[in-house]
Amino acid sequence: MAKNLQDTTTLNNGVKMPWLGLGVFKVEDGNEVINSVKAAIKNGYRSIDTAAVYDNETGVGIGIREGLKEAGISREDLFVTSKVWNSDFGYETTLAAFETSLKKLGLDYLDLYLIHWPVEGKYKDTWRALETLYKDGKIKAIGVSNFQIHHLEDLLKDAEIKPMVNQVECHPLLSQKELLAYCKDKGIQLEAWSPLAQGQLLDHPVLQEIASKYNKSIAQVILRWDLQNGVVTIPKSIKEHRIIENATIFDFELSSDDMERIDSLNQNHRVGPDPDNFDF
Ligand SMILES: NC(=O)c1ccc[n+]([C@@H]2O[C@H](COP(=O)([O-])OP(=O)(O)OC[C@H]3O[C@@H](n4cnc5c(N)ncnc54)[C@H](OP(=O)(O)O)[C@@H]3O)[C@@H](O)[C@H]2O)c1
Image (cartoon, rainbow, N blue to C red; front, top):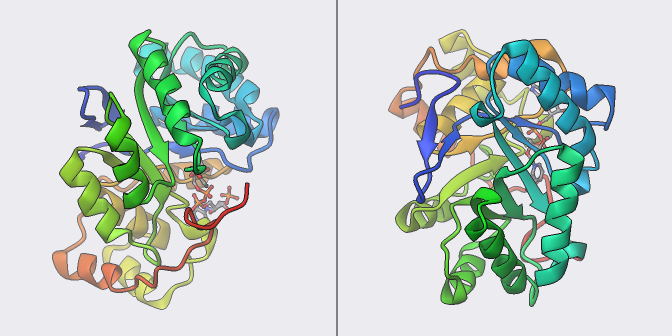
């Protein structure tokens, strides 16, 4: 079990990925994202999750450079994720989109690059491009996002390289137990997006009761539940005190009873789009 903020899970290719990272969806490019990334690095985060479509890779890059300098650590100490957006899917277009992301971020490699959504008929060519980039050493690990079991099965039929990560919506209202078990079986690390259900769970009475028992916040209880389930988690906050709060989850352990109580809150309820029914 992870003991501190910089502890890592080992992906199926041997690459180490921190259990906790900072998400920057809907964080404005410029000072807002620069300050969030810097605050995260300053407070010990070693993983940042962005995407081309978030339109903040330039600011993320500045935050990374300034954050690393302030913390006195090097690029290799950080795990940076980005994602290829749906409109860039296809082999050549993905190769080009990757270069654009890298340039905006001001980096010469990515730690993880993901296919953002399983667009039917397009994700296999996109995957081939990720395999090429991986083999060329430009990405340390490659993966997918929003893939259901059937998407993974389909991809695996033709993939030369198995995805190392699947990043999906996951929180107590959408616990993803079946997908988690499938991914564990295949050696694919599950990663939770919107782990806090974008704030919708932060007054839940059962979670509040559990949180009070451990003298923790609801956010901390949820993020701890992720860790104890073997799920990588990337809460987003632009506020330093919450960035710190969300990382203070390595000093307590939820009992198996409380883990089960949280599991029982599942309603298969999504706060984001359904990977089997989206039109973008
Ligand atoms: N692959 C995908 O398709 C996909 C989709 C969505 C998200 N993601 C990734 O997952 C990351 C996280 O998901 P998310 O941003 O959608 O939502 P989230 O992390 O579940 O929730 C973020 C919201 O909760 C608030 N918050 C954070 N910590 C808090 C705390 N300790 N107490 C109270 N409120 C708190 C934040 O507000 P403040 O900022 O004001 O603190 C923000 O409004 C994203 O940033 C992105 O990197 C990926």
